[in-house]
Amino acid sequence: MGRCLAAAGVYPEDTRDQNGSDRFHHFHPTEQLVMYKDPFARKNAYYPPLKGAKNFSPEMIGFHHLSPYEMRVFDYFLYKLKRRVPQT
Image 1 (cartoon, one colour):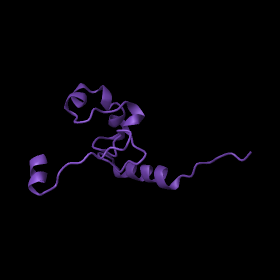
Image 2: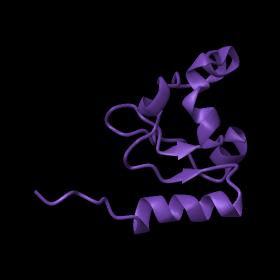
Image 3: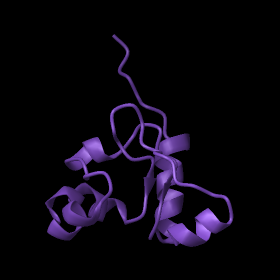
Image 4: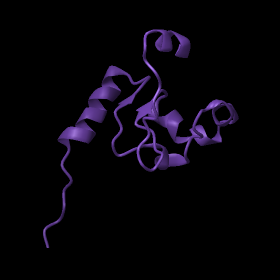
């Protein structure tokens, strides 16, 4: 895939945030959480996966392998649910 992109003038860039956390996730979130334990992922990743929640950037852009239902749940949690802070 890299050669095809290069032939089209598209070159890869580091899309991680300033802490090294991923913005684009090519696996389901539950798989991303434990990616650091996977010997195949550790061996073949250009950038080694970070442990647990550190793998997720607050500026994340997308996940792969989400069902339409899961996409709606993520949309609700990320954009519609307001944090309820008790009044003191």
